[in-house]
Length: 91
Ligand SMILES: CC(C)(COP(=O)(O)OP(=O)(O)OC[C@H]1O[C@@H](n2cnc3c(N)ncnc32)[C@H](O)[C@@H]1OP(=O)(O)O)[C@@H](O)C(=O)NCCC(=O)NCCS
Image 1: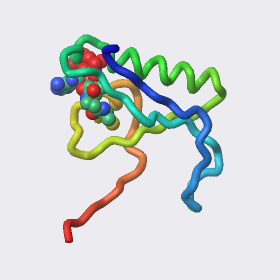
Image 2: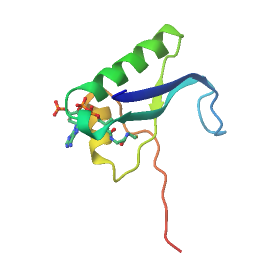
Image 3: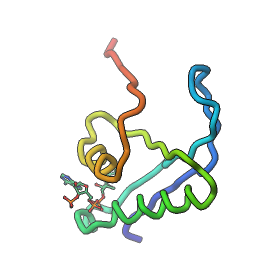
């Protein structure tokens, strides 16, 4: 195995101020280090998107750490836009 992607195709919104429509959610994406920069990440994401569409989803979400510039850049390249900001403070 060189990598994997997991997509939940029907997730219900939980936040009260969100649109009530279900969405698809990429819960995991990883390519083993020795297989990176060969286009696999992009291919896996395209498959996840195609599966989500096939199952009737109209939006696709993914969470990414702010410091993960590589994944963030990849998602932006594939048409994802910033949607939610989660903030943290060391105590
Ligand atoms: C994010 C990850 C899945 C990308 O997989 P990948 O197979 O290397 O991705 P691709 O080869 O398809 O690269 C697609 C684009 O991502 C960006 N990218 C990938 N690796 C990069 C790097 N080391 N530096 C900068 N940009 C990078 C580039 O824009 C690249 O396009 P390009 O090759 O045309 O320049 C992989 O780095 C990974 O598994 N990281 C650890 C786990 C992780 O962070 N998962 C995401 C959690 S939200």
